[in-house]
Structures are given as structure tokens and as C-alpha cells.
Length: 374
Image 1: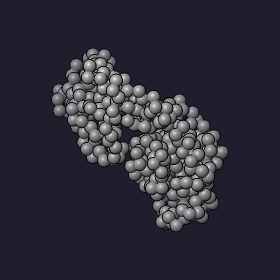
Image 2: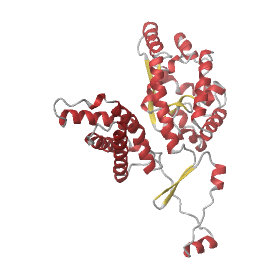
Image 3: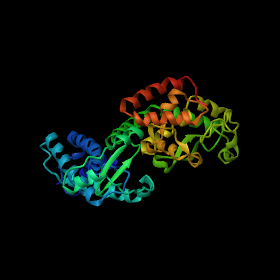
Image 4: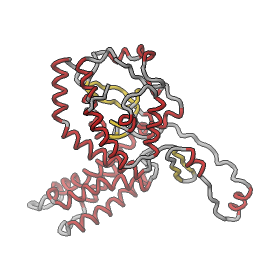
């Protein structure tokens, strides 16, 4: 959301300036390459500035002071880029209006989504006694180094952030810059894939309509980032009303642990088996990736009834957005042990990089065309 706000702020501001402030016959700023370049840079910089001023963004509620500070830095940066790109564009009013749009829209969306973006209840713990030598050093005004080696050795990708008088410990989470890079990659890749798969999606929708009838798309509540629910979209592969039968079939699940998978599921239609075999049913999830509810690469999106059965250590897989494909899918695709899937998810979180995402995406292609889906 913040990336999109930063992206459209300058074009909208230029339109406002053109309609309200520019003299008749003045050139249209929306056609200038400088404006397009600055809009692209502004879209990337706005969420990065928010993260720079609040390292745990977007996990915690936003401070108005930090929003205004981020808007001011964004304004100066975009003004400088705009001036360097096209010195003939003398007015800076469009950048000022853009900064106002950034702060107002981002603040409003932050208020609406505060509960959804929160990682959940935060456990507070007092700082333990540091020992006589450390306490004496503090009295003398000498610095004390807190050794966090134990945390780095025992936790998956830990992040420690100083916020005011508190230390925030995230035992498993991508760094703010990592999240920004991954989100930009998701927007670009999902946009391209939606265009490339538009014909297969249209053919699939028509086939479902003609053979199985309505509804064409099936929606289901799944656990997103930090376990917050979201509506996942897939092409319908089961008979109508199949979801209501799920609870009664849990005991027959072919997967050990808190994951539901029914081998030879009788609820799946013949057309649905074909769509699942080549993962065509999952193409609508590209729109969930574009909207930020999912990522292109990540752990499999779990059902809410599965999350209810999780043990505490299983929730670590919820600290990243669920993915359309992931390390487990390209390594195994199907297995009967949830703990093995959990190990793959932890391996992905601990070793995440853009190159790893690219590798998984490339390895997904032959897996899909081999028709190994179920």
C-alpha cells in the first residue's frame, strides 16, 4: 500500500497542479519523462523512508511525527531528483502536494489496518540483573556490551531493535530492507505473470463455467502474515459445498500433523483434478500477491483450522507472507509429514535472499509442467 501511495503521489500532484495552478496553455507535466522517473523513484523511496525511521515498520503502529519526518525527507529527495532530471520544470508545488498525499493516505491506511498489521500481543519482560561488574560500569558511566550470541545461535534470523527505552526482539523476521526488496519484486513479478497468464486464466474460467457451472472462483479464509486472516482466491476444483465437509474429513487426512490433505479427495471434480495437476487453479492467487496479501515465494498458506492446531514453534512460519510457491513445493511437492514441511519453511526464512527466491521460481516451472500437483 505504501509503495503504491509513493508511486502515484507525484502524478496525482502534477494533475492537481495542472488543473488548479498552471496557467492556460502550460505544458502537461504528466507527459514529462522526468515526472515518470521521479514517480518511480518516489514509489520505492516512500516505504523505504518509513522503514528507515521506524526499523520495525510495518509491524507497529505508525507515529505521526515519523510520518511527517518521512514525508519531509521524501519531499527533499524527490525535489532533488526532479531538478536533476529536468531543470526546466521549475515548480516544486507538485512535490509538496505529493508529500501531503503520502502522509495523509499512509496515515489513514495505517489507522484502518493497525489491528491487521500488528504481529499480535507483545510479551513484555524486564531486563534481568546484569551482574555486579556491569552494574558498577553503568554507575561509572562506562558502556556495557550485551552479548546476544545465544540469541543468534538459538533463533532463526533474529532482529533486535532499540525503540525508546525498550529492546524489541524479533526471533524470526526478514529485515525491513529485505521486506521492501521482496515486496517490490512481488509487485513487478506478479504484474508480469498476470499479463502472461491472462489467456490461460480466461480459458480455465470458461471451462469451469461450461463444465461445472458457477461459482468459477473459490474463496477461503487463510492465515496470512502473523496469522492474520485473509481471503485466498483459487479456481474452483471441488463440488459446490465441499468446504462444509472438511471438518468431518480431518481424521482421514493423509498428512501427519496440523495440515489437512486428503489423498484421492472425493470432493474434487474431474476437471478440478486436471487443474490441480498443473496448478492452474492457483493462478488467481497472483492478484493476492499483487495486493500484498501473499508473496510469490513463501510458505504454503495455511487454513485457519490448521493454525488452530499449531504448537507454539509452528507459528514461526507465519512471520513471512504465505507464498504461491516455496521451497517445500519444489523440494517435495507432496509429503505425509508436516514437520518436514516446517523444516523447509524454517530453512527458507533463515537463508532468505533474492537469489533464493529466483532459484525457487525457476525450479517451480518444470515442477508445474511435469504435472506433479495433486
